[in-house]
Length: 85
Image 1 (cartoon, rainbow, N blue to C red):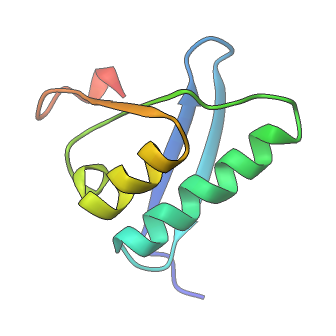
Image 2 (image 1 turned 90 degrees about the horizontal axis):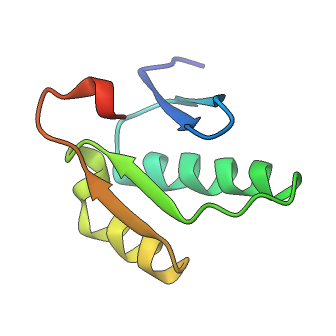
């Protein structure tokens, strides 16, 4: 299996970090990573309410639709402001 990228999910309240490995950088893989992360957090009775991301793949309409369908919100940080992730 070849890994081309990762998505890092960070809970800023607990400092919990989850790294999702990605085989390609499509929105389908991003959506899969989001879904698997949320499934993982549900095992600890944690519900994701808000995503904060850059406006790369997380700005794609399909992913925004999935976030809305999950009754979640997303905000975007400024371009190059990686300290805000």
